[in-house]
Length: 288
Ligand code: SF4
Ligand code: SF4
Image (cartoon, rainbow, N blue to C red; front, side, top):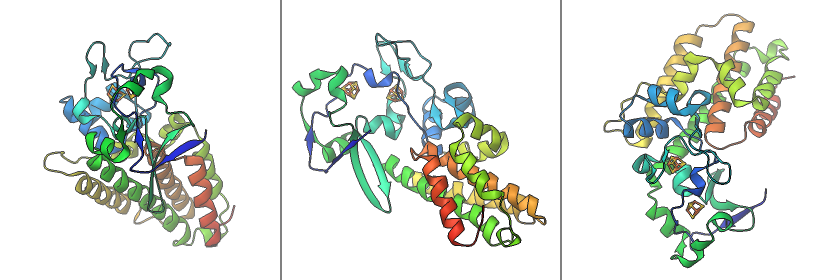
């Protein structure tokens, strides 16, 4: 679907009429910081919150509440007559809606899907409420910390992919004539999220989505950096001493799987990223 790109000074009907329309039948992806914040708000551990309210190892908020008049299921955090039960900890996607955000090569854009402003379909009354500029809306929704978390996790995603490259290219695996690893990256890029989560397995999924980091006194950037260190340490511990090509192949596939799963959590398209990373690896001598 085409999207309409916005400028920060564009003025739009961005005052929500609070019908809860978009808390039904929607798709809300979570990065690990957002998951930890939601769990904190519910006074649960991230693992408890993940098991109760998320799909695919924690990358998506579950929409299994009551069905509304349009036949759409409510978000697991939506309460009739009250609305969002995690309002202060709501994820970035919820704060931004109906807008979206795209970061590409340090170029940040805000947009909405389609040519018509999305709220008009089910909440046409928004045109009678105050109009806001995009920057006023972002300030109002307090998106800054969550945008910082999103940026840090995009870097972590690329760092994981870089580790998968190192395991393929810097260990002699690619030079040995390996043609198995890149096709496996492609398969994972096209896998359903539940299947990819299954191939990653519970131990690494937990390391990816519910790291052992306390939220207390952590800002999103230091949380993501600590998470990065924990993952690096685990890779070092489990993969620092691999001896055989089959072991290196499995390790490269696993770490690329983590990068692709995190990519989906961040709203990127794993199939496109997998192709991009396969082409980059080929430019450096890998084969399929
Ligand atoms: S669709 Fe728009 S106006 Fe309606 S509830 Fe959602 S954000 Fe508010
Ligand atoms: S987290 Fe809150 S704002 Fe977001 S979809 Fe669920 S109920 Fe709605």
